[in-house]
Figure 1 (cartoon, one colour):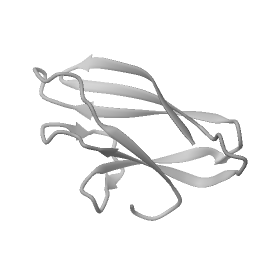
Figure 2 (cartoon, helix red, strand yellow):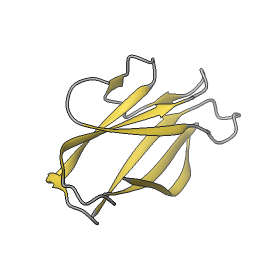
Figure 3 (cartoon, rainbow, N blue to C red):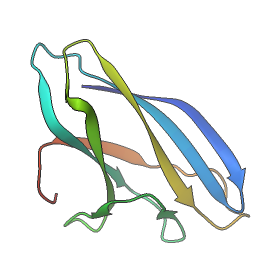
Figure 4 (cartoon, helix red, strand yellow):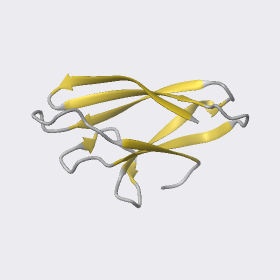
Length: 104
């Protein structure tokens, strides 16, 4: 799987929107959905559109795939929304992708 940030925008009020393209670069069909875990967020930052908190304490977003699958070579786009103190610099973090159901 390939994950690429295609846009990062400060949208006011201490909010940051990061847009990612997720491409299935394997030969297998991905089904169900993806879990995107944001790791390493500073304490002053919250993921506004998180679906939950992983067992590691990191927020995650559950991404439902178009038509329930992501075919080889196909991509989907998703947005992560963060809130931080307005005086803080842009947010740095890493992402982990998991495929499947349940809670990470």
